[in-house]
Amino acid sequence: MQVILANPRGFCAGVERAIAIVERAIETLGAPIYVRHEVVHNQFVCDDLRAKGAIFIDELAQAPAGSTVIFSAHGVSKAVREEAAALGLKVFDATCPLVTKVHVEVAKMRKEGREIVMIGHKGHPEVEGTMGQSPDGMYLVETVADAHQLQVSAPARLAYVTQTTLSVDDAAQVVAALKARFPEIIGPKKDDICYATQNRQDSVKQLARTTEVILVVGSQSSSNSNRLREVAELIGSRAYLIDQAEQIDPTWLAGASRVGVTAGASAPEVLVQEVVDRLSGGDPARIGQLDGAEENVTFALPRELQ
Image (cartoon, rainbow, N blue to C red; front, side, top):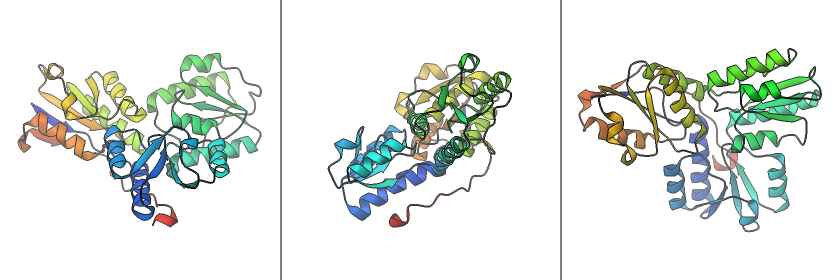
């Protein structure tokens, strides 16, 4: 059995920055450091940060007065920022800059008097944070059916933004439905779906055309990891989402001569290598890798942690 690795895969610049912010805050200020929600959606990463001194909380009130809190890579609403200030918490913001870009777009569009359609998954922290950038004038749409049923107050003054980790193809279908229903709707100057999501989905499409089975390394809570599994299945490959090598079911691999491996943007390479080692039996001759887009994006840490 040959094992073919997707490229690129795994950590993106926003995830690397978020993890580094937590680690640097612990090194600089000492443990514990409180983190609102999972800083990134990966069980292994969060367990590692807990061992170093991070405490993950659901509500800011769980952090003692005067303590340090880090906002996750997914971003937060204006109300959360105001609550942190009211509680006297020291805040480091690990929001991915590409999510912040969407927040800035929302503010600009609302200042222009436009209502905004947010395309994304209900309940996802990134969606909650983006929807929370405006107290009104925003609508959440998840599917083409939602777009067909959407009722807005000002169809002539309508705009849309998207969650950064959506399926590129699914988002395009929803945008097309919105444009058909609301011909005057406008979108962002540059697509909101981030470069890393796009690159990983392009790579998994290529992988799915040449392998019978694809294993996606990533946690169930990771939106972009789930999208990779879905994209692979749409191409026709059997695809499974796993957190670690121990979760591989041998029956998934029955009859497969080529197995593909990729990883969501919040999954570390060490987990990928454990999966590859288990599949290949440690034989380098059985491992190949696709060519793919080169990623050299980096995001700076907050000045106080540099």
